[in-house]
Image 1 (tube, rainbow, N blue to C red):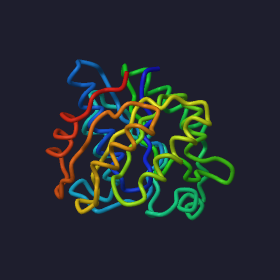
Image 2 (image 1 turned 120 degrees about the vertical axis):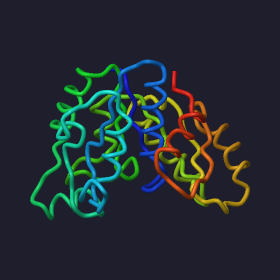
Image 3 (image 1 turned 180 degrees about the vertical axis):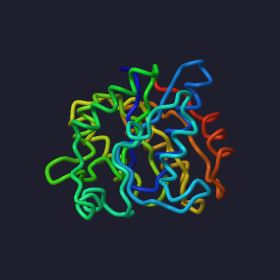
Length: 225
């Protein structure tokens, strides 16, 4: 089941942007690809109603249409830690159910791009976290590094955890989320040496989001090997 698990050094570092860009690159190569957001926490008011913008973005960049319940098995209301949001709704996030949904998605598209939630070790229930989910899906991991002060520590710790779970780190992306970060280029150069996976691309800071930003990001990324 070819695909990628997109994780990040923290929340808000651009996982959705990179996941959508990967879907666009796969589509440009003529492949069928579907995005998946197993757990989404935090509905927002959008033109499409009260929904999860990350999920809508992944659906919009997928080349095939799938049942929303497969793309996003757990749609939680509050924008808080997912295991806490789930508990408030009397829901337990079941990783086996997510794996089963992913298997069905893999049956309708050549590639799956699974976007994690928060960072790599965010809890999903009382005993399992996002790293456990990535291990169960057994997909190569793409790490999104939000370029800001502190990202070196976060990137190296995440790499260490990914590798300790027996997963392959397929590549990493430098996403500039702080336009005023000092010595950003030097930080990227350090990570290019320290991360045991190729740099797939650098995404510059863009204040405005939307589809134009996804297209620009896709142009700057290369697919992992």
